[in-house]
Length: 236
Ligand SMILES: [Zn+2]
Ligand SMILES: [Zn+2]
Image 1 (cartoon, protein in one colour):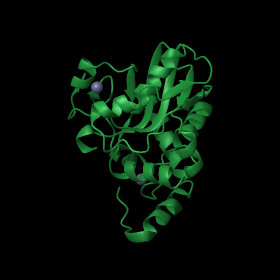
Image 2: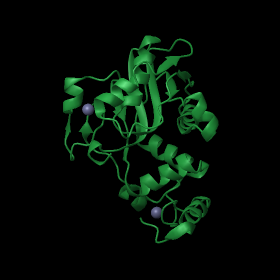
Image 3: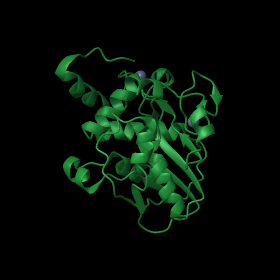
């Protein structure tokens, strides 16, 4: 469902909509039992079906292993990203990330858990911000998500340290993004065998790949990425 509200009031309108329990967060209709959404809106979301079995890169509806993952297998085993970064999902993620909207965050977590299936991770690991950036922003969305998911899934939350600040990867080519992140993270303490790295949106996977490498150095044997949404490389 699209909101027909334009201009500066749009964000406020959306926040108000989401603040009303019992009403669908997307259309204000009656919710499905125990949910924050109605079934038609839930079905209409940009669910990510198919894609690369490893990095979840959208492959036009096909399920396969993409060329990048075949040629350069990443340090993680697979990305679980149930939604595409599109439409209502993009707006929710932006409200959560840039306006620190807890309502949007809670809704995104609920959507993620509703699509997760069995979870065999023994610990969650959020993508840390560089200390300078954390001071500047005051909100680490991955940390928030990991804590919320950790309490929903009854999993401990491990911590890593970001040693390299990477303000913007956008201008960099794909190999440069991966090289830029090399050795960017270090783990604070040992990890169990099965770990899930938590991030809001995965694009190239360069950041989570670097963190997955650090997780393996700290003892993880199987590393899954839990992301709310996946962008397409073609669109990034
Ligand atoms: Zn609805
Ligand atoms: Zn792939």
